[in-house]
Amino acid sequence: MFEPTLARPEAVAAPSALVDGEPAAPRVAAGTKMDVSHLDLSYGRTHVLRDVSLSFPEKEVCALIGPSGCGKSTLLKTLNRMNELAPGCSVSGLVTLDGTDIYRDLDAQEVRRRVGMVFQQPNPFPMSIFDNVAYGPRTHGVRDRDELEGRVEQALRDAALWDEVKDRLKRSALGLSGGQQQRLCIARALAAQPEVLLLDESTSALDPISCAKIEELVISLKGSYTVVMVTHNMLQALRISDTCAFFLMGEMVEAGPTETLFTSPTDPRCADYVAGRFG
Ligand SMILES: Nc1ncnc2c1ncn2[C@@H]1O[C@H](COP(=O)(O)OP(=O)(O)OP(=O)(O)O)[C@@H](O)[C@H]1O
Picture (cartoon, rainbow, N blue to C red):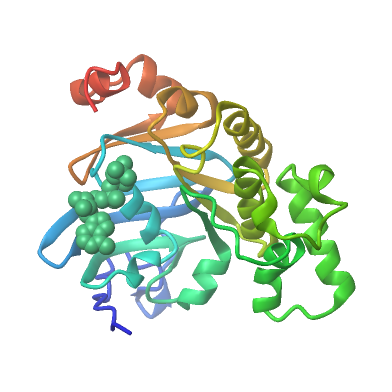
């Protein structure tokens, strides 16, 4: 076991700061689900994120784009404190969920329950389809069989997988196709009833049909969840995201409504990237 060396983030605009003895109101705009302010992150001596500030509007999809190694996945992991699991990681700045500082004022387990994550490669547990989806609720103390069954069915329906698996819930999840496995992983994340869903290149390992199903799924999830996704697929970002942020070498270069970012970006580096001239 290693000890994470996470530095306590220095609150830049701590929502819990006292002003004249009264708690200050959260300094995030209405409609903002998560907010990142002046975030810096290093792995040992490698400075990976530099003074990143970015807001994630509630119940919208935000795509993080940029060339390989620019820090997209690292930023994603700071949103549910997964970065703490990497040795030598230190972070400063402020990350809030509904205006609350997730590093100072929330427990890491609570953050990870409220902010779920799905990875690039489908990673179902070697257990039944039912047990995969029930895993989160069980971990959070749900024991009642009816409640568990209800949660599993709802999550599988939300992940557009119920009809394909309802007759084989006791069979191994490893027998599903890659695309089905990834939707199962989304169902597993949804069963924990998160408020935010992080998708880290979650379609890049899939065939085009499975990829299209996940894209449809993400579109259907907005309205219920706030989604932040990392993608290398510009067309995918254009198809399914509402807002988009372009990163380069650890800096957030430009962010805004996806259509604006793709049709009339202000920064020439962003213009070159979305036009496919590099990356
Ligand atoms: N656990 C870690 N320890 C040390 N360095 C890391 C770690 N994770 C990532 N890095 C480094 O941080 C930088 C950003 O990596 P990150 O994975 O966030 O980039 P990315 O934009 O998501 O890249 P890609 O698109 O290729 O997935 C890279 O230089 C990477 O080598």
